Amino acid sequence: MEILTNEVKITGVKINYFFYCKRQLWFFTHHINMESNSIDVEIGKEVHEEYFNRNKKEIAIDEIIAVDFVDNNGIIHETKKGKKLDRGDKYQILYYIYYLQNKGVKNSKAVVHFPLYNKKEELELQDNDIRVLKNAFKEITEIEKSDKPIEVQKMSKCNRCSYYELCFS
Image (cartoon, rainbow, N blue to C red; front, side, top):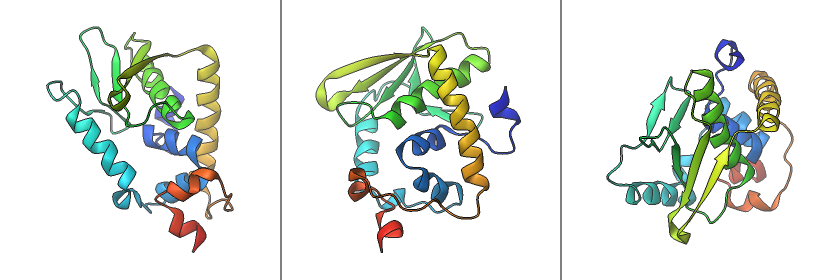
């Protein structure tokens, strides 16, 4: 499996950052982590802690992925504080499925819970998703090996980003 033989370890967080903001990915891969100062991240942790409190949580696998929990049928369960998945969240979870399939786990499904909105969404890994992920692996490797972050690109989501000060001060 190519994600295990690359010089660069592709983690679930890197997949999420890649789809959210490539500049944020560069900061993160160069050990500049601003997430500890983020109120959004703190709220997400609290929602995660409150929900599924009887289930085993945070199953770390190979220091590559960390799923919230896996049920008796092998289905991955993730919890999100928002009311819908953004592209980064979606591909991070699809990457979990892909990673586990490549480790021999036959699960091909995940359920994402949005407890604050009392809804859930199912995800299944499709062939097109695998192509998207493989392209992301190549770009993530290039970004991580780069000496400089990519140029700032102002987006509406920048105002809520924990890296805002690094980009715009």
